[in-house]
Length: 288
Image (tube, rainbow, N blue to C red; front, top):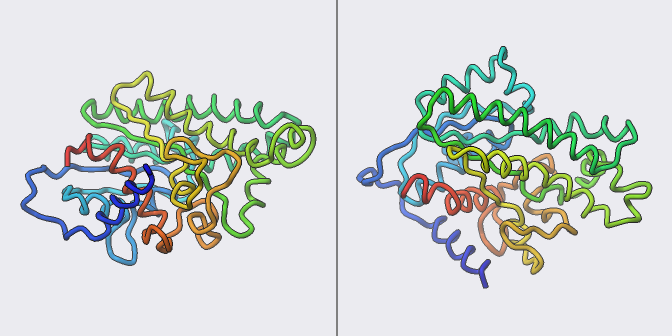
């Protein structure tokens, strides 16, 4: 089964030898920008290095990571041409080989509840977010490219989240139309919700389709598959379920991957995400 191969690879990564300083792969500079996903996955951990760096070192990839991500920030803030966020990003990107940007979640949290109160449907609000994010995220990645034509940019939508205890309340607040009124009777509340949240993956796909310096990777469904959901594959999530509770716990605010090992895979959701990011991006872009 495909997922068993993924788990085997993850277990090999977790037991890999320490970073080999004699690796023939040259060290490359990676800039991480955006919101709290960047700080959780690419910031320091109890082990002293980030989950991103652990995944890279597990494959003998030398790295120089500069993390400028700020929890709670939005694409609207990072795209402001007169703001400090964009100027900081442009400066950092000027000397980078890769720029990983993680944004849009806080824009959704800020915009979607108020959009719902105007009486618009979930799809109409999703359209509003999508159009705004294509514009704002496009400005950000284009500014990076303008600063450094050789830098590669990578991004991805957020995985299937909100499965922790009590986390459904946040999901219901984000797109309340999916839990009340006519839309609830038309389809399952969770499918309605997931359909709109996945639009953020669509933003990355749209931007990458017109920019050869940008790669959109798709990790959707990873933790569902790790939980044994036979309806989920990596890149093809089960829209009728939220992410599993162990992967998106309340202690991580319901929107960040868990850091405790899962009993079956013996790796945390954070480690799984970074290993799959290696599979889809770093293994080829970094050639290690």
